[in-house]
Length: 356
Ligand SMILES: C[S@@+](CC[C@H](N)C(=O)[O-])C[C@H]1O[C@@H](n2cnc3c(N)ncnc32)[C@H](O)[C@@H]1O
Image (tube, rainbow, N blue to C red; front, side, top):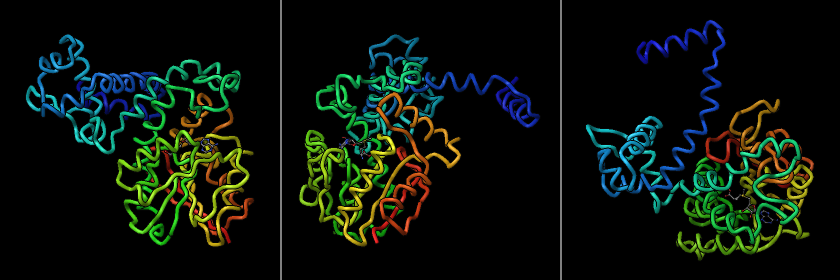
């Protein structure tokens, strides 16, 4: 049977309502694609390709210091996944790899790939334990207060680099989806991590000032990224703790919360929103960026699986629906609530609300 015949037969099976185990095979082997990508990053395949402009299988084996058989398999797998193109005998980066998988490029995505592979997946191996105990499996809550711990060397060395590689894109999506940000004066990015969102917002809107509110040791990471972006005169850091501090800093007309609320249980999420409401002036805007579930809690799959990652990584975190966030915002005194669907890597919905 040719490829086309096979696809036609799958489609015919589906249309006829015939159940096959093919979707299950695809589900269970999804991890093989993730591991292939992570190994290619580890071996710097895309960097090697970029520096050479294109290599034969034998040359790839030589450059990576591996034998020809594994080189052949890796190249075929990466090409099949859209990570490499092949012209004649030469393999080269696809546009996707060239943009996001070459270390040193401004929007390098390898930070998240490394984090997921080295820190996330070992925790996912113990998923049944997380389900049975309702406890994270990437760290031990008996030994540290939260996943964001300054003494957890693996997290410190990888987590914020991982978030930066994702959140720069979310920041750009936000500036396109909410152009009225150009009229705001000062933005406080609460739990702003590496500063990616503040950096993208200030790049897009030249009169905007911003601050990254973060745990003190994370502020040091953000300050470095801000200087690298050349925005030290417009973006500051506000060291603090949005759980322990009674009040958040005032003087900002906009607060953003990107991929923050899903780290916490509902009670904590509501408390954070109440603190935001107190800190903002009348007319102040709050923006929540999250991968939200639908109201039935049956999808979309990415939001549901990010929720499973919250089980593995946090004590009380979970993914919520837009309706749940809208309820919390309303109860905290916000009004004029709007939601904007969007496509980013950490966000499928932007929720805007205003303090009356
Ligand atoms: C999932 S990350 C999101 C980071 C950033 N908003 C982004 O989208 O890249 C959650 C962030 O919340 C910060 N955070 C956690 N607990 C905090 C607290 N008590 N006070 C301030 N920030 C906190 C973490 O340091 C981390 O950077």
